[in-house]
Image (tube, rainbow, N blue to C red; front, side, top):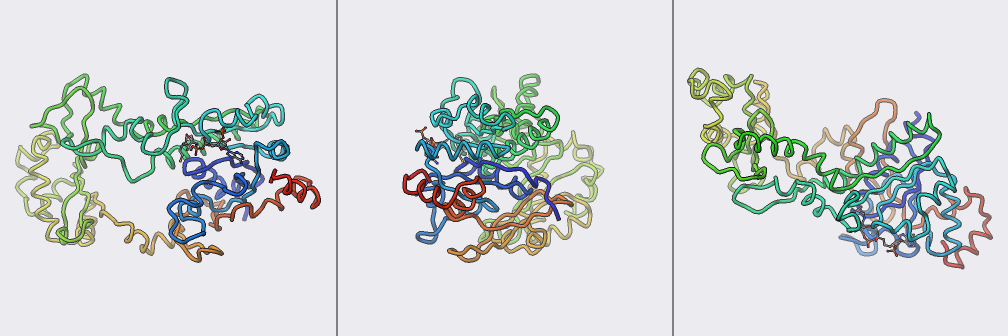
Amino acid sequence: MGKALDGVRILDFTHVQSGPTCTQLLAWFGADVIKVERAGAGDITREQLRDIPEVDSLYFTMLNHNKRSVTIDTKNPQGKQVLEALIQTCDVLVENFAPGALDRMGFTWERIQELNPRMIVASVKGFGPGPYEDCKVYENVAQCAGGAASTTGFDDGPPVVSGAQIGDSGTGLHLALGIVTALYQRTSTGRGQRVLAAMQDGVLNLCRVKLRDQQRLERTGVMKEYPQYPNGKFGEAVPRAGNASGGGQPGWILKCKGWETDPNAYIYFITQAPVWAKICNVIGKEEWATDPDYATPAARLPHLKDIFAEIERWTMTKTKFEAMGILNKYDIPCGPILSMKEIAEEPSLRKTGTIVEVDHPLRGKYLTVGNPIKLSDSPTEVTRSPLLGEHTDEVMAELGYTPEQISALRTAGAI
Ligand code: COA
């Protein structure tokens, strides 16, 4: 079966996490992704957080599946020529170097356009144009600058960053959408264009509801679904909301049986309005279904703390999975707090290809997250990440270089 992006060639100049997330997705959709790495060293993550000496780290392998690797010294004049040949034969150049690095290499937008006017040049940067445009940025900087950290955590504690890599992988996702959109526009214009996904912008896009709340707060001075209501104080900016649901249906994380020893024996419980009467029945507080202090969503808002304490008395008598089983029967929205161990062992995720076991020639078998986006006409097969420079000769030959020329370029240190 064909793949959605068959025939699309990507010159992958990405490293670390944000860019590689993007190009890995494009590879899973069928693009030919040629990862250009620095000769001798490669993507810095190959050797970061290694669990096996001298073997590509899981950091690298889990972000670079289905790609080919070529090593080119792009600061060597002959290496630059090889890169030019690649630019002329690829559809998209994806990069997430520090600001200005591509220009310093001699590959400005104008130069790339001269070489290939159809080329789409897609970049991740920490910030868009403005006071911080020259800054280098990593995940947590983006979470802080994009509004996630100031709105995450508990009111009486410091800002908190999340385990979800919304700055890196989140921005990679944004960039991937920009790239396929630019490819689509090129089918009618014939021209390439620049695509920029700034990490601050990507995080802020995912924090959209908090900018909503900022404006609600400025208008009304209070947000009744926040845990600060009715007793706490609201300041000038959106406060941290703990585990409140952030939407119109109040929710909280509640202890389940075993919480004393299992750090993940918890469930997320949503007191969705349409099933309020069922919730009251399940927890044995039938009278709340008709009591005017509890019967309507608005009446419940000042009592949320007490309501969740009462529901927790019930959830603490059940394991998170027992509670799920009972609550789901009544269509009460809830979710177990799953540990990474539980997720890794979950058979249904293996079945859908969301968790995949991959074999690597040096590390052996390991688990990875497969393609989270499923296309019915473009199935994903996850193949292992390339070894450093594994495909240099193959790609050079495709570009028309003879074995003698390849060997001379290698001697010159260009590849
Ligand atoms: N041959 C020769 N030189 C190469 C090369 C190659 N194949 N590939 C990269 N280089 C050079 C670059 O030209 C650059 O040189 P310069 O500084 O002389 O211009 C140098 O390697 C280092 O690149 P840089 O991107 O500055 O790496 P870094 O390790 O110092 O910074 C980041 C890493 C992630 C902080 C930075 O790249 C960045 O801010 N990127 C944008 C935001 C981003 O994606 N952050 C999230 C990462 S998950």
